[in-house]
Length: 383
Image (tube, rainbow, N blue to C red; front, side):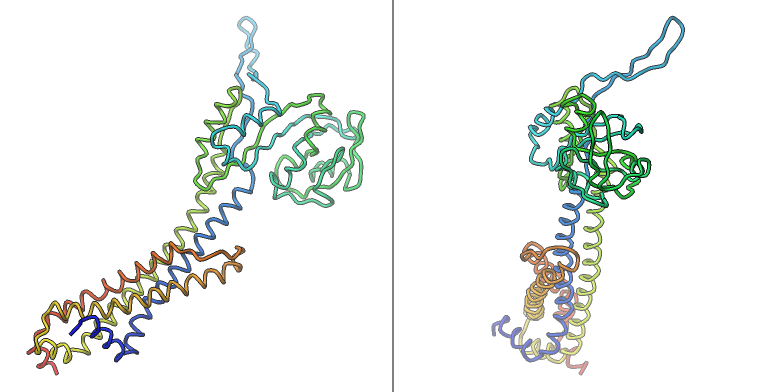
């Protein structure tokens, strides 16, 4: 008799037992695939949001420390810049081999200037880059800056007693206040922010740049390579990774991965135990049947093969069904976690089916070996 057909007939005769045996694998694989799919999507979503949230590389002019003195009298030291940054340096930064990993390259220019009779630091940056470079800024009024318009930090607005719609005078020019920023806890709270061209003209330094902020896409985080390449493109600049930002992004993404793996491992372990207990119980209940099969000439290998085929069919059907349900569940609940619905994630599904088959077969090996070792006389005596 064909062992595979016999195994299939046995499953059809014991539908409830087969259903209960497969339930553990179904739940385990369904949960694993759903969590793996969601975790993968969440990792990508978190990474994309982190990559959009500010810079992780800073480019400033390289400086040397110069000691000053007269005779035996020390006058302290000062820093002397080797070279100055200009707007043209942006082209050099964007020409590095890893340029496709650069999401933003934003020039900033700082200068101290009069603002309606008060000395305030002005910060210039490309007006169109404000939403991307500072996505956490919130303002009353408008965040969009036109020519001759400014944003006031919360402290600067209080000092000038000015709000949206007001005017600020500086260097013989009048600037319209487009909006006032909510407190950020950073230095920009005390600054006047405007388009970089306007601030450069105010300081009479056209094309000058104080520093560049570079936002590198950090999925695989080759930040050190990017830093080296920018340093080679700009020998007169000091390029440094904001390591705290990079490390915090890595840690946030890794936490999602570890959470998904931990929960999946627990669920799969429970599923494997359910298979083991169910098959062991089935062997105990089928002592008479196994004894009859051994009495009519079935060898131990045939008994072992029969039970493994039965468990194999259950594992395959349960794994495929669980993986399908897991993918569907991940797609349906993705919007609840703030993610757009995406297509089916096949790698977790394929891995889930493989794990389900392995769990089912491994869980069935100990009871199957026990059944195969059962002698006909012992089986009949136990009835």
